[in-house]
Image (cartoon, rainbow, N blue to C red):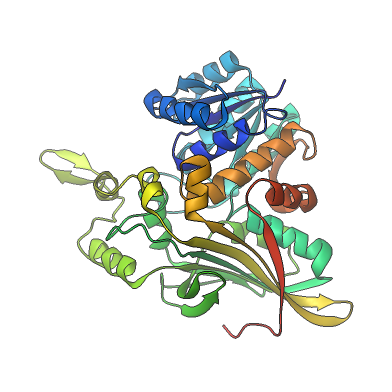
Length: 401
């Protein structure tokens, strides 16, 4: 029996367990756990209503290794799917090692007190997972995740040599709120306000946050301003595709969003260092998070589509070629199926697919793995059959940006 324990009951966790329940031949028993069990119970009620499947729920503090390991021992899953906060990656990995269970996540570790996300902390677990005969799969979301698999698929089937890679992430959705984030506000704002970074000719090139802007016409969305950013998959792509000369990540933001963000930065509400208020320490960004709409509540009001893909230039059969591999996801369709908007959907579905491939043995190994290291074909097949169909476009020439 393929029992799975999912930790994290936000929008991504909700999508993942809805989609797992739709594949009972793979996921025979699902347990959803979170710090607040009431959130799990609400998701479980939705799963029951939409799919007829009953999932179990539990309460756990994922910062506590022993408590997490005790829950794993009680549930006895074949796999733990970590959809909690990136701060908790290492404690959950430790709990999996303690209990002898495989591990999967969607985002790399980030310390609470520093806006710095990198794979080094998790790659350091390679020898321990290998010695235990366990597999840890990192970054099985969309970006990282699907974009990494798109790159692997391009290298395997579409290009003999990749010279440049650009990842383009566009959320063309509109939720009608003056300022809100489509996933955890704390993680989102830490990510956006970090300096930009991209890989070029074997070195990292850094610049100010949101300083490099380009306009791109996204299919089914339209022209959008996109900004050069650092994103975690750049690190693993540079490591596992060392022949690519330049790797960049772009994300779209509206003018209103950036205006609000600038004001919040100027008044200090995006700070992550503690400040004294009324005799106690608070973290300004955590206070701001409490003021903003919960991302999971945006589903019913969000309209529009996401468009995320990879553009690679290189050579095929001795001729230059530029290929664009992309997915377009509709917010309203995602909500109709799972009760969550497309940003959660595009991360939760790949988490389910990565888990399915591990449970069925199509992806297996001992140690710590990034998505780029594994065969892209079964993952690409499941994207098409589980709600995230992809397309390949030949572009006439390398893009001028």
